[in-house]
Image (tube, rainbow, N blue to C red; front, top):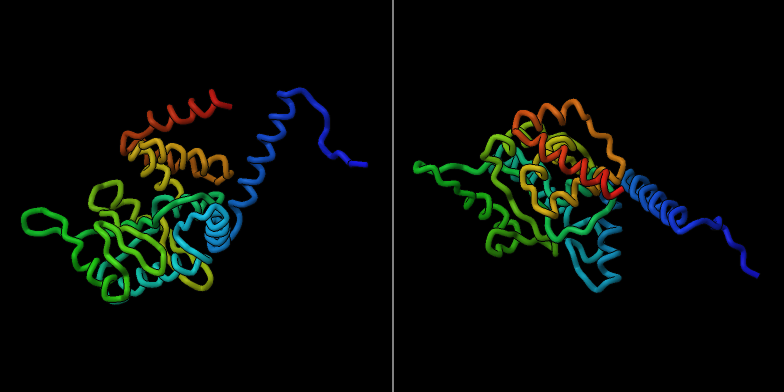
Length: 232
């Protein structure tokens, strides 16, 4: 004899319960420690025979972060901030992402070109493999993004200091992360913002609004909110 714990209901009622359940799971998983999210994502990828970021755990990503801390200590660059998909995962529920992105202020040459060659050499010297614009260390693929334009520079300066498994690092604030995603405005970026909102993150709407108005991104935000509302 089977025990049924799901209440009967109309199609709409059942689908609504399923949707609410999924949102609740996102909210709950968003509260997990960052290293736990990384490990869960890695485990999910292994089950699909896909190796993204880490083959076993959060350790490769944290090892990359340690190198960024060492780069700051050795004055290779003054600061950095975790951004991109891993920043989305830091604030929200676990999410698949194929690489890690870090905001760093790139040096400028006399003719105005950006030259991160010293950065690449530092990471190469410490065991990272250079592949085009990317680097790879212990299975973790990462990339440095130039914070040489106003919004990116401000996001870097306003990054928050956090700690995971005793390892300190900087991550762009939630409000600046949303602004950066709105500025990029790719389909993936809009999905990332929706993922954050579905994860129940606590957005400082006043601060976000100030940033969006300053960089003329408020219309994109309103469009995204309207689309989410239409899609339920």
